[in-house]
Image (cartoon, rainbow, N blue to C red; front, side, top):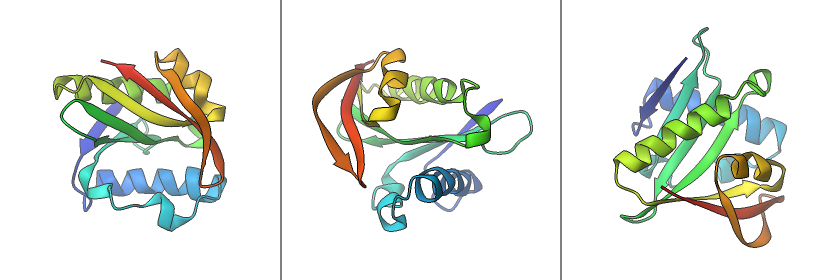
Length: 144
């Protein structure tokens, strides 16, 4: 397994991330394309996990908010690769990267169906449930 990182929105790594997000968010969950691919693509750090067979299987992006905080977004694992702990692996890599860049906190907006997954990774909830793209979410954060 390897995890590759890019800021280059013209790279193969980024295109692999978009393919995963297309399958998970647009095709499976019905999120509109215009909402999924947003103005923050070029400002984000994109992570893609490749298992041994070299097919891209999971992705996440980090969007710096300021010098102390970064937002974890667009976390997705292809259906055929779920329940293999790939989500945990890619989040740990993103957290390590954020820590190395001297960020102190990671924030995220979790779909309610994924809340317990993030809690198991050490994230805590705050605020009220809200809707994003017609899906219930909750704010979460973790100190690094």
